[in-house]
View 1 (cartoon, one colour):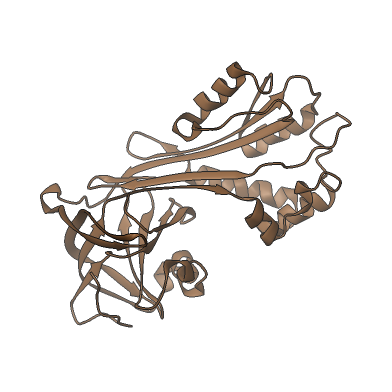
View 2 (cartoon, rainbow, N blue to C red):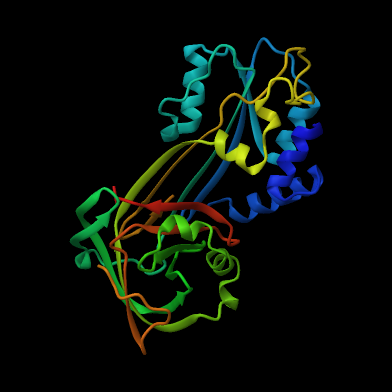
Length: 314
């Protein structure tokens, strides 16, 4: 509550808790799918200290509005750590609950879908990727078919449709540009949110050459959250988690971690230098991702579920 709540709502673009709850519900219901064709499972959980009294009304609200499961046990115990790791599955490596932990919040998103137009495995061939750490040889997926080709001042882009779901977007920086710069490019953001209204596009034959990749990251989010304006929750004296617990001891956020892994192959996605150009040639274009690039996996409603930079394919 208080200033802690205000800072979080401001970063999330929500004017009040009711608005945030509506946004969460819309995001969740639009993207949750587990029908055998598409797996897009969102999950949220609270891990409580059995020695601390909590406010049931708050736990009920978290369950109702944020689809959060609640568990309670002895913090720091092997059995409680095992329970958390089992819940997290393959995201669990190195995750433990320390004895002094008051509460832990764990959220996951598992996504897997097939390409609408799968890549022919017979066309997969090794080639050179000019990665951040030097050249490496890896398998490249190849496909030639008609589709929409997009471009901006600093990039060219194509999207690969996923069966009964969203798209995996690939953004190739133009010469002299970096994937990091594209993360802040307003044209990239506008294309992702309004692709149908993008004027710098042409429907033509695209010869796609995309490296198979398996990339992962493990990030400490504290600095990023502070930069965005969420600061009070990290301060023992300023943090206000009073609606959560009846305990007198101050509660504050001591850790904020994020881990992700994204893999693509001929079947789908499990969440050469070319001449720089501002517009494509007449009827065909080569789209070759042989150097660091940006990708964005969007869900059924167009929301970005995963955003990443491939510096090395593996």
